Length: 502
Image (cartoon, rainbow, N blue to C red; front, side, top):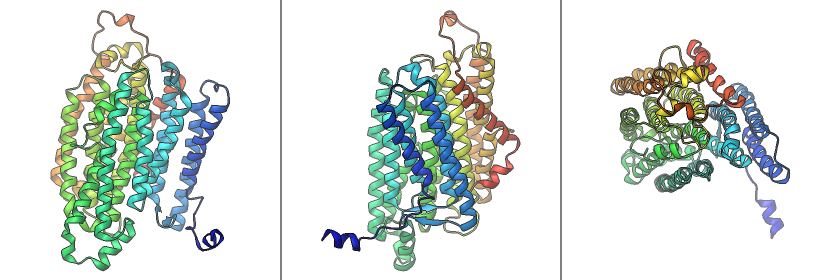
């Protein structure tokens, strides 16, 4: 019987080279864990440099695959479960960059805080696998698996600083609320399956084209499924009103983990959202487009206003992240206007471009916060940045560039990102959300100005001299320097990156 089953059971053909970035990350994580467990402690910087090497290898494979997509075109992988296209490769490269920079931020931090290093680096790579699966999924169940792979690793990393009760609290909050969001997503997938007979994106569209008549367009089961999918995905991107986990988790988690969470997780979540809305559910765009519009407006306004009243820089950047999610949702809203249409989609390209630019920006910004946080990772209020311009002028200058970019000042990458999504909204005549986005950018600028004033202008107070000095180890300096350089290069020469965005 076993031999008969072996002869009759045929699995899908697998293009292993197309999956090579995932395999490299998986192999790197497994090798790091096994070798780390069987050998004495590694030399200083070794674990971080190994992680950077794995990330670079994955990113280089992504570049090679980019040329392959251009030459041979997109296709489906693993029996139609994954999509191999420029969006997939873009997510691979962006997440590889996030891993490399996060590893450099983590290098000194784990020794400073007494955290076990190998596990954190391995979790970066494993969570990245989930993020890449999210960005390439062609099936709601596969997408759910990607969400869980990414999320479970992030839950553990958020709680990895066992000496800080805030870290434990952040991990528990993220785990509980993340479980709720996953349940919403899974229930939505079940309802979509009940209405269309499949969870595969291609088959969902085929079911609509062949079996679903015009009246079925308003079928309550499918619309309820779409609504629940949006709830689950909105939680992952921290869109208002599903943002309530972000400030506490961002503040409590180890700062390098917060940086990775704000970059790689957002890239994966927005890529997944674009996949679901544009490729699985384009026929229902008229129903969910107003919801996306409202999520964008609430995130823009809510994130900007709440950010300016905070006094802890990590909470400020958490609400800033929510505001940036609003800008990305402006791009998503512009993209769904063209859902189902052939040809270029400027909203889609602008959103993915924003994810890459923001990922680098936020990693560099949290890199500075990592240094200022000092031993214990608790010195993250505005007072901890007081007088930083006198102590570390070069570090403060880098932070200023990154903050100006987040505010959208011209000649920085942040301006390119914000201009792209607003331009995409204007092109599809979404003038109202474009105007609200510009007003939100003005409000949020006050937030970044407060941090800059604290660094450059605020006078030292009694006891400031007794504080631990801010140290900037070489790997951390390299990560911040690369982020600042990228920010300025894209600000002055944006054309090549805009042209590459899928």
